[in-house]
Image 1 (tube, rainbow, N blue to C red):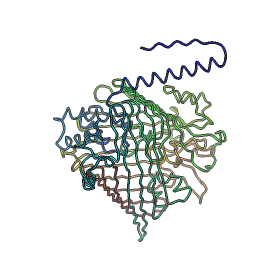
Image 2: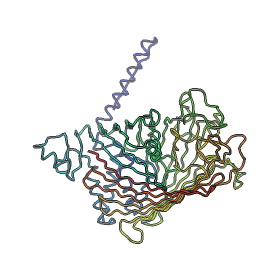
Image 3: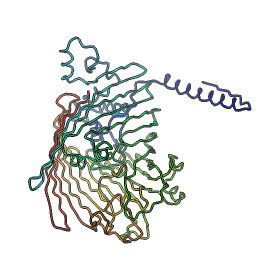
Image 4: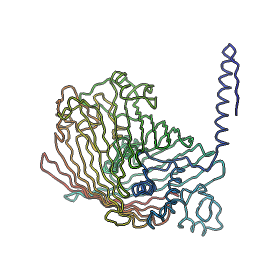
Length: 579
């Protein structure tokens, strides 16, 4: 129990003294809360690409982790450890392969990671001989470049390295390729069981066709060094501080984050473009979950034909997002999310309010921002089946529903996840349909489109398009995973004459509706194109923390306006280490 009494006396010096005293008290309370509430927790996040997130989602579908939702990622390491512990306590519900994978991940997510010689290899630790170091490098132990772990703090340092070769073989003998190499490191840990931190930075080099590399990877396409400076180098960084209260957390920094249901992509927030710089709040109480994010994004370079210029000169672009999720009746996760993209000289207070109704506030702020609303649900009718769906409302006029009016801008996504399909252990199937009506994500004011550095913040589909995807997954062992994906996409493009927009049909994220454009926008109007795709992917971990990936991708594109078609075959092989 602390009691603080402040006597306020007149005068500027006394006010400054009281302010300093108050700040010192707050820091003292924070420090005491860290020291006296310290526990064996790791509150730093697991990267989105980590396979444990997909595995936990599968256990949720199987009924081992009832009502588990993968709709907001990433997760704290302590949360993942708790979920793995819950699954381990229900081992009778799992197959032998699932039990093996739980044990594999429990080693990695142990609170004592880095301090167990029998399970961990610390490469900059004490080695009796060069031979013992080599043995650790090629062993099945959990590997770290450096680790310092005690009851108050953890520091884990990991070496990140990768090399990937990509090639494209088109009809008529066309061939192009690129080799990507990167090296860097990750520093992560937790202080006093409350304050998590992470810094990750990598630097890479490109050899081969720059344009090909950029068109096959949206992260490379938006990398400043590679695209704007015409360099052969590229770099990426993520860093954040995160304070956890157990039932809630606050975070500030840069990190890849995804929000929404779906597997081909997510309507709300995806990781296609650059990482976001943001402040966030998350909380959970029993069956209720809350998430809020406010961050900065980059507007696209250059103007677009006929759009209003209403943003103040020198404005910055921001995104605000909040999500309310409920678990109901032991079979349903239901959520409502709001997003708003806006441009101001400084952040807007109305959108800094985590629980404000963004759409109504947007109207009160003179209807100049891009507000979107999403409802989504996950339904678990029986063990082994998950049905899910999302409805995105970019704009709506109830009286004009069903007329084809351009302003009814909706997005849909629906699918089914089937685990152990046809009673085949470790064989899953995902079937999904996604559709974006004309003008979805775009906006009448230049820069207010739902994008970050010209890449969609949501689903990778362009507006005025739809896509079917069917994916088969097979985990042959804890170390080998195969997947086969088939997809068919249709898109109605805007009609261009050279570099000029001749007719706007709502087919571009960056080109909103103009005053002279048609009032009605039929779906797939414009220059229709389609793509059929077949992809085979294999992920193999021959040694713990060494990952091999091979991808074969066949795409057949057809221009329905001209009647022409072409087929491309893409191949890639990659090696990644996280030591």
